[in-house]
Image (cartoon, rainbow, N blue to C red; front, side):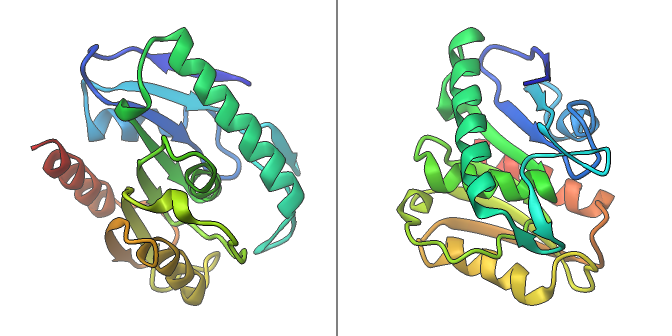
Length: 199
């Protein structure tokens, strides 16, 4: 997988940055720096191409996921992150997943499959799948943002993601914005959330 790493302080968090459709490993670096200037930043490029745009998994149509592909790509990405912990000598306890749109969606899949991934910032996620086993979401800490008039994520799908984490007694903080675009306000709230978790 193509990725970029910007090393931070040894005792600082490690942010795994997962871009939206059409982005790449560089896309969320400015947000990572804004959230914590001391953090190690690792941006990973999605391996799927859709009309020339990078994604983390295939979809059959807008809002309809290729679930088999999602599972195989999720495992591949999880294994890759596991390898990064060994290559760069950091622990899963340091990791915060930060995903936007398609990157947030694959981050949900990672948290469902790997109990070591306990903290995430999910920016405009959607997960229109009936989840059979969600026990790994217990004891997770998650900050999420959703749009009240999001043209990509229907509001009922936003509530589906919220309920998925709430039903497993995860520690959830969420903010509603207007649409699907990232705003300064939601990044500012995410930064406050991270600072509160450290204090």
